[in-house]
Image (cartoon, rainbow, N blue to C red; front, side, top):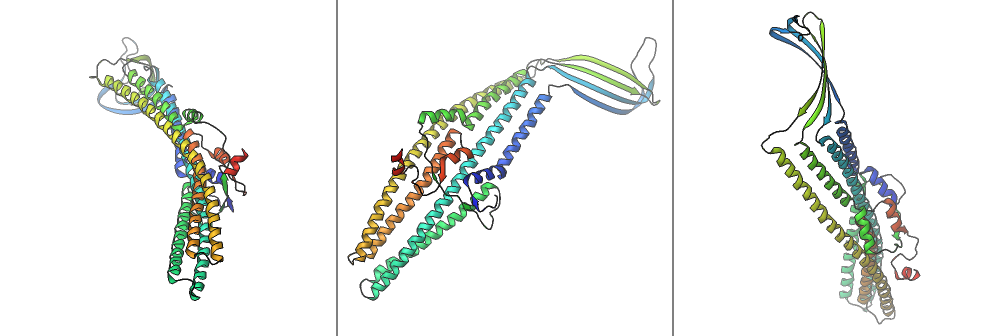
Length: 437
């Protein structure tokens, strides 16, 4: 991953797509499938082979065949034979044609698998990117939490010295401080692990100095309905495209198996030069048609046809099951996105309420009618609301990513439309933002 001062989400995704070893391997697989397609097409072309051999016989052998009546060909014990052989397939029962179809489908399948891998990598990079930001923001919340508890601990220590509070309150505050520091350490460790995973997805080692991530919030999503999303998934999901091509490949394999039961016709031609120990070469040529007719093989070819028919039927059933699974995935992603939007609105209200409760408890403590433990409890409630808010923000973006992935349309450009730079404005999904729509 390039060493830059600031790393945007789009740059992180593009760098992963160009450097991730698994993704590069999938692109090489496309090239390999292309070579297989070229080989299948070349199988329909004529083949020309050259041969050369020298043979020592135990008894004199004809150097060439009889060329005219009454003229006996020369004999020799050492024969040198040079030749060219040409073979052109004229009819193979459709096997060569279906072989090209099968190879072409194989290349299309590898392309769809590469597209599927790119979408999964895009989703993973985006999720880790936003998880880093969530953990970083949560760590800052805990920094403020620890500072507040430390201040309360100092206050409790002074109050105990004046006899206004007991040792128990001081111990409770100390326990909360220890736990807050431990929680912050855990969050920071998870953040470091997320950074390592981000660079692992990019296919490069983590550098000593990591860049700053551009902060984003969820952008306003265009209105759509579940049926539209389902139709998009049926038209775009790589898995469904792969399944359809596997069905077509199954039909091609079935035709190839049937072609083995049909005759094969080829054009054969040859040019030869033969010589004995005298060094004089005699030329000869031949041209003809070769016909191979399968008569009996004990049922091997019939069994291969039956096997291909069953395999093709299995791919059809697998595609049918896959369509049901995709439909469920789309519905689950749709519902999860709706829940994330609702949870984001709830957390906004919760932060407002817990902030007011904390202000009241702090005012009561300042006036001498409140307890330090009540302030700490109110701070704990606010901390929980803030953590829920950060999780809801993360879930809103990831569920939108999941919804795009479920439709088969996830890519760097589409991801960029889901988020907007964080400029302090109300984020999409909040009550204020929805009221403006």
